[in-house]
Length: 350
Ligand code: KG4
Ligand code: ZN
Image (cartoon, rainbow, N blue to C red; front, side, top):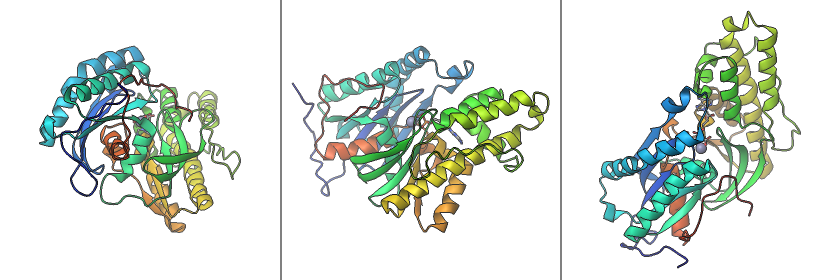
């Protein structure tokens, strides 16, 4: 048996709506969502584990898997209930296959395979990063192909040239820390708590970005790779050399750090759009929730007459609606997950 197949209702494009159940469990969120035609969210449930990992200052993989096991059933059940769609009305399924924490991925992946197999509905595996990119297709203002997407999360930072729903090319990525990881580490250095991104973002709004200046590592200005560990180290050096004053200056440090990170991210995104001759740009992933980044990209894009697409806050962090949105296009294109398919922790090399 190579493919999971079988369909209870015909769901040909243009003739009938396709209802997809998405499942996401790659890190510390257990999520399920029901999405119609890859763009209309009927329900989206996200069960966060922040309370569990908070006290350790980061995600503890073993605890994450155990919590996913407890949550997955109730979360999927709740998503189906809230959507108002009967389980028999689900036309297809999409589940995150990787990259992520293996133990966490396995919980959602195995659950989804079992659900699809027992109900005889088609299922596809979705790359988590493609899921994030599809968060901009939810709603009424999708970008026009081809476009350039900046993906900024806790595990990845990269720029993609997105050609179609199922084709994209990586233009550049971080050589060390992901942007969200740098946020989390800087927040930890200042004892601000976990996850640090939103805490630093809020603090930055109360500080002066011009008071303490941190380096902008543009690397080669015509290339699209990033490096954030230097900014992080510069913040650390500042803290070490100002052990008494820095506690009074956390807002200015946060503002200076955020200004440096968002300068580099917005510069490279706009350069990438120019390079590829694209008029539409997107910003996705957990760090796309950052107020400083959203504002800076919107204002710089306006100067260059680019159309900006950034998802609403609830679709920036990990969620299953984006997985269902991406999976919809793979299902429509006839992709199916072989029953013996496995999860992967790192990005697959084609
Ligand atoms: O996409 P996501 O939920 O999970 C991954 O796939 O990694 O991203 C989580 C990351 C964390 O590093 C978190 O600190 C960061 O997104 N983040 C933010 C903000 N909200 C979340 N970073 C900066 N500003 C924010 N407002
Ligand atoms: Zn993510």
